[in-house]
Image (cartoon, rainbow, N blue to C red):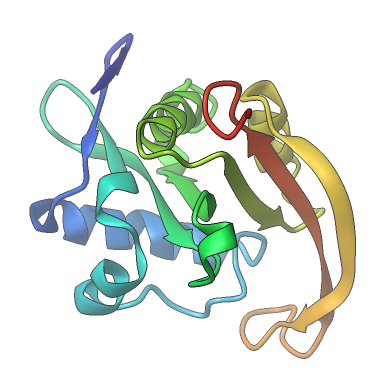
Length: 175
């Protein structure tokens, strides 16, 4: 558990799902968060996200302010310490440290689980996410040009670039 002022980061449970789904949908609606056109069902989310690395940030009343989760990048044993993550913050509370708290919690949970690399892809237009990740110790490793075509929203049919980022642990995977 990570505590930031006015925020508590705890494991994401099924009871948080409705609020998590709504925050995910708000991110999707921007057109600059994901190629996914809609949030998955709880069953699909639960099946694809690693249980030890699913977190929510809660305010003092228990309202979900944001979430983070990680998925394995491969089932090959050499990539056992590499995950891909997502982090979403309720638009009403963005730029208040919620994302930083979630990324700190994710770093803690992944390092405790012998994960040495957290990676993700961010649309270049999502400058706020790029800044957040930079402050959290992520670095840009490259740009995948025209890697996917949008299927929804005002950018439907357009090819999108994705900036690849990663955070290497300073604790695990150092031998």
